[in-house]
Length: 293
Length: 174
Image 1: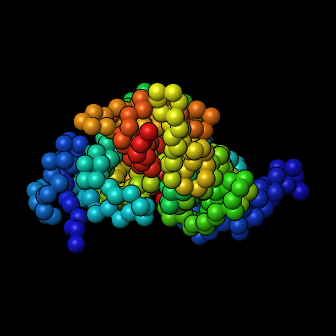
Image 2: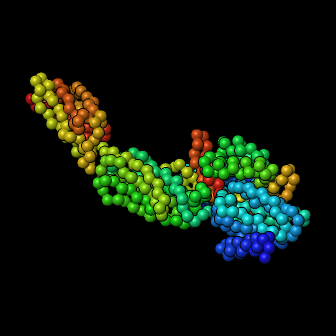
Image 3: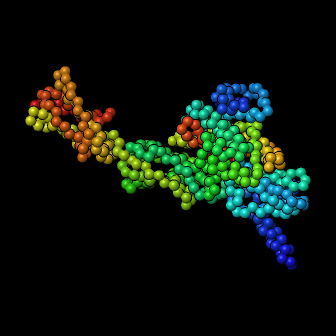
């Protein structure tokens, strides 16, 4: 066997082995090629006829142009044609041009997730308050449209993990999660196989709950102070949250806004016998006290 | 039950908003004009899609298609900037550079778009639509036509909002 014939033999073996691993072969009088390949796969295009020609693979996603010899094969190496889409394979030469369609499908293996999670900060205890949407891509940034199971996990240090498994549809999957009862930074993870994408969702205390104040005399004034201000899940409402004290007596009314400091809000107001004193924070009402001294 | 809307026109952006109520079979299609059919949205997500949002997304997508055709015909990747972003822009720009290097330009002429929005993500930051599109592809090498072929393809399109419009982030046929 001469060196040249040995090379041709090896080339033929490569073509046979490539063809065996691919789907249906499309054939026109001048072109033989798979009708579909996975993105980035190696494949070959067999031509017929004789003489020099030009092979084009054309689509919006990619363009490849090769000089070919009629009757020979064009070998498209792994990674060369990697953008999913519809392509025309065109052979021009001495005779009329030949054209075949070629579909490049996304690679089967997910490699990246585009994960949209909202909001990044929300109060504790909200049902379906957190949403996540995922798009699944292969290593060539093709959207994998075949159904794939995506696991969504929301974990916090103090609570059991919430998990959902959602099958993608047209490459997309979405879910809703409850915010937990405890403030802190929770990890919101989308996972498909070994590919993960994480977002941090900050859960902050909700509105004050069970707002209570006490009153005590302080000379000519009355000293008002709340108990430690907490939300309905027992999380401390952050310092700076405004608490409003209102004192009504006769036809007059005094209002003082006080930020919470070290967990409580405190203020001194004029002591008017018979005054009705109330406390509130935002739309949350606390208790009322009638000052009789 | 909502019916598909059939829209004709060269100025597709105007046609989408102005022709939303056109009945099927109305008007003729002149040379170079694409038929645009908009199927009722079939959403898999929890977020409702306002009619204005749907119209804007479709209008912007159809404009993007025209921009893509112009960019591929003129080999000018800069034309993509207003309508494409992310992966779609990168891939189309890469194609244009490949065309330039090979002395090729391509003319894509849509004959019909059949559109349906299938996903509006819960946070409102992405819209996915399907376009069953019929188009002709003409390939030129050094200015000489080497092939003209009709193509039917199902495109999956992912749109994301920019400052004043929806931009195409993924444009992928299957």
